[in-house]
Length: 330
Image 1: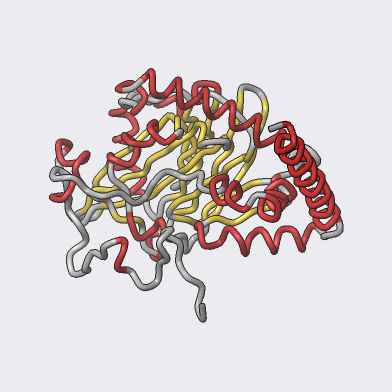
Image 2: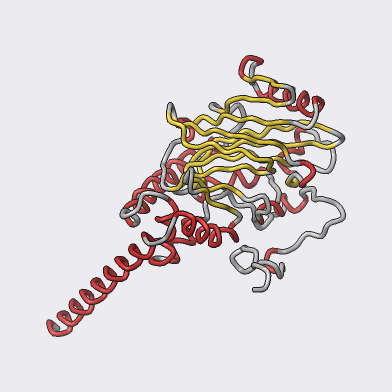
């Protein structure tokens, strides 16, 4: 008995020393890389997940050609988010323009171990009445419909990041940072193609409860702050689940920073996980809201874009079983 126990301790010590030596070699390998090499390598790794990394701001943001674009948006995505540790405030703004109902939605909050914000631009194929909003599948804006978007995310008096681009889904995520949604303020700037679209958007903004003094107008650009949401929130229906999810998010943030404690920026931390704990790397970068789901009976009747066939998740030859697009030639 004691003989086998001694052998077990020796084997355990051997693997501990081997693991320590392996981690030390990986740290040296990462430190030898330049900033450009780290950014290029990390962007190659996270590209299939629909995101890119900026070393200057230590920020993750969505790509214009992200695979999430194919799945649009519906209210169900926000409703299931608290169950998978995505706790945020959201503000859907519906308005009519050129014979279609458009949706510009704002998000800010905690996405797993990331603090982030989003601005999404979507539209239906026809005009909708308010009771149809929650059961309609909105399509992402096409290339000719992209809007000039800009965001600043503040946590109380601290600026976390700035991001701006012509996009259909502008995002920003700070990895390893924990925050509570009510402590975040999202400053938003949206430039519309004409006054008609801007006026329709402002009318909806006013109906939500934003006063005339809460936003400013510069030509066709609207600037306002999203601090306290005026619409019904997903967390209101499951407060205990949200609290539990936030508790887990805080714990995982601390674990992430402890495991990657030799480094201080996200590029070094993620590359360290990629070489040392690949399974943890894959789990860490899945920090956006689910854009895919298996529809139930109610959701199967959602409106879809006419003339295009819907694809089942398991049948798309361009995707692997994890939902990532395969790169050409692979």
